[in-house]
Image (cartoon, rainbow, N blue to C red):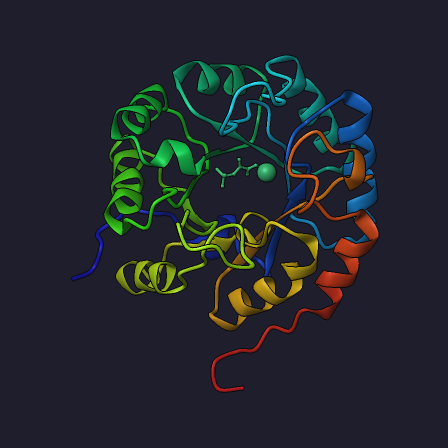
Amino acid sequence: MKLNLNIANKKEWLVKEVPVIISGPCSVESEEQVLDTVQQITSNNRIDIIRGGIWKPRTRPNSFEGIGEVGLSWLKKAGEAVNLPVATEVANAEHVELCLKNNIDILWIGARTTVSPFAVQEIADALKGVDIPIFVKNPINPDLNLWIGALERLNAAGINRLGAIHRGFSSFDKSSYRNAPMWELPIELKILCPDLPIICDPSHIAGSRDLLYTVSQKALDLEMDGLMIESHFNPSIAKSDAEQQVSPDDLTIIINQLKVRTSGS
Ligand code: PEP
Ligand code: MN
């Protein structure tokens, strides 16, 4: 069985060079934090897309739930300062509307939203007639059909610059990973839809900085198209995911160590 998605050629809109690198803070916290981070991480000339979370789906309340709408213009300005497109997470139609109003270039659907067909359909409906790239993170539980279903809903709404993000799966078994990689799921998705770009998010799989390189290299060995790595100008003061965000210098070290092995090498 092959998955019939009507999608744009990934080499034309996204994958100019492997790996595509998406980086930036877990959360946009302030205008200075996002600008400083973005300016520092791009000095290596290896970043393709800037990420920054505006609305944060925290597991429990009373933790930083995102800066909200005001952060969209900070994110966009930071992207403009380095001449790169910016991406953020949307979880409902209002988020979509605000992102479009603020000229956010790329959207993604988070792992906690991909599990809900109602929420995904609401986002797809809000995007009818809009030509914008969207990434779909895997659902938090290891259900390939939910992941595929979200991609299909967006595609049916006319989105053809589509990509998948593998961020690992919630698991009852405790391991050194924050989320179990279960590599077989993105591999199956790749077999079902070879043209679909797949980006690995080693930050949310690893949950800690010291595992980022290993997970990133594994993703490249499995011929994934790119990486989404959270970064912060000073991870120790980050308001979310402080353990896994990496400093601009360490990000460059990781990127420089990665080896792209083409088939057969
Ligand atoms: C994020 O990218 O910061 C995020 C919340 O990711 P996920 O949906 O993968 O948990
Ligand atoms: Mn995060």
